[in-house]
Image (cartoon, rainbow, N blue to C red):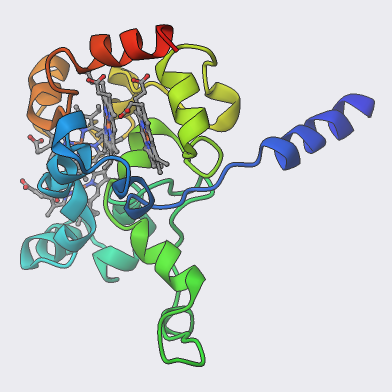
Length: 202
Ligand code: HEC
Ligand code: HEC
Ligand code: HEC
Ligand code: HEC
């Protein structure tokens, strides 16, 4: 019993939320540090949700005996969004999507959900609410903390295979090294070393 209460408290204390890739943009758009946001924005991952609205997607779904819209069907949505069935994206009805504020803008909740459409940063790096501050990010970068308790994860081949597997109707095999090369968004040469030097000399 005590153990259960303890774990409950842990989840409350460390409860991380998916915040959406836009929240990573302000710090990860500069060319000097690799412009990860831009690389991602131009990748197929960023557009993965929109793909479900194409005639090709609808045809694929019908071929599988699915009569609902692919973008509203769990069997399709799960791999084309961020954090499905894990506290992230949820399939919602028209009532949810039409919520607006007094000023006629989409509500915070609607904006968050929209931001989780597509395969965002957090689909690979983990839910960001707890690690996205500058202090935490730098502590992770310098290896002072692992970040795992804050939801941060280092992506591996297994991360990719959660979606790149036979359950994908379009699966044609997955060669990790090759595919990684296609989506990479590394720091520029020398960035890591120069930043570490600065930190040491503080
Ligand atoms: C307030 C600024 C800020 C925000 C917001 C932010 N980061 Fe960072 N992040 C940093 C800094 C600073 C570093 C250290 C490297 C650098 O200077 O770019 C870093 C490093 C990283 C690293 C590399 C860690 C390592 O060990 O090399 C990853 C991955 C990362 N961030 C992902 C994200 C994701 C995903 C989000 C959004 C959920 C995000 N960041 C939001 C500032 C931020
Ligand atoms: C949450 C699910 C998910 C995860 C995790 C994921 N992907 Fe993807 N990936 C997709 C989807 C969906 C597409 C297709 C997007 C489209 O065409 O609209 C895709 C497309 C791609 C593409 C371009 C199309 C192709 O197959 O050549 C590459 C390359 C790729 N992913 C590599 C990776 C790598 C490497 C990882 C792990 C580091 C990864 N992906 C993790 C869902 C995912
Ligand atoms: C297990 C994860 C997964 C599921 C479930 C899934 N997809 Fe995908 N989808 C992917 C990945 C990964 C890709 C990238 C191509 C690849 O390598 O498989 C992709 C690519 C696509 C593409 C682009 C095809 C291309 O060649 O560029 C379409 C369209 C698509 N999916 C539609 C659907 C539809 C419709 C459903 C539901 C019936 C669905 N997907 C279910 C993971 C998934
Ligand atoms: C499909 C999975 C995937 C997505 C989506 C993704 N990343 Fe990454 N990211 C990786 C992998 C894998 C690595 C480690 C790459 C390597 O080993 O070369 C990485 C590395 C990084 C690094 C460190 C670069 C370095 O040279 O060490 C930063 C910073 C980063 N990602 C930020 C982001 C941000 C910000 C976003 C969203 C705008 C994002 N990533 C989206 C998989 C992903």
